[in-house]
Image 1 (cartoon, one colour):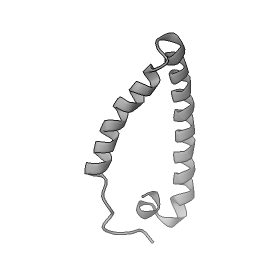
Image 2 (cartoon, one colour; image 1 turned 30 degrees about the horizontal axis):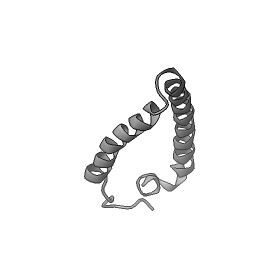
Image 3 (spheres, one colour; image 1 turned 90 degrees about the vertical axis):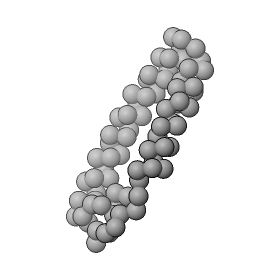
Length: 72
């Protein structure tokens, strides 16, 4: 999706920024998951993941479409 919507000269910047933000979010999520695992219940991070995955799937299913025009 990123390559269809971004001009060719900016694709590297966009993909690099997306990876950077993704790695930061992953690190924070791992810290929070460990904290929930140790502090509350070992099952809590997994149940939370299950609950948060359903709205993501619905958003993906209903809102994400193929672009009408591809960037060259």
